Image 1 (cartoon, rainbow, N blue to C red):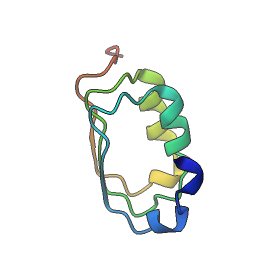
Image 2: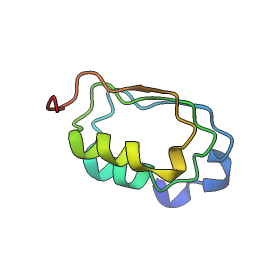
Image 3: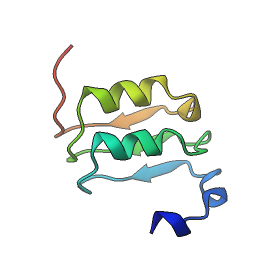
Length: 79
C-alpha cells in the first residue's frame, strides 16, 4: 500500500521499471512529486499513459537527472 511506503528509501533510486502495470495519468501525477532526484532511467512502457503524463515527466523538477525514459505502447499522440 502506498500509505506504508517509506519515501526516504526512494531518494537514491537510479532505475525504475514500472512497465505493464496499468498505470494511468493519475499515477504519474503522484510519481513526479516523489523525491526521485537521482533517478536516471524509468520504463513506463505498456501502461495507459497519455501526452499529459509525458508532459508531467518533462516538467518535473524531481526528475531532473532523468536520462532515459521508455514510454512505448502507451496512448501518446504524436505532437
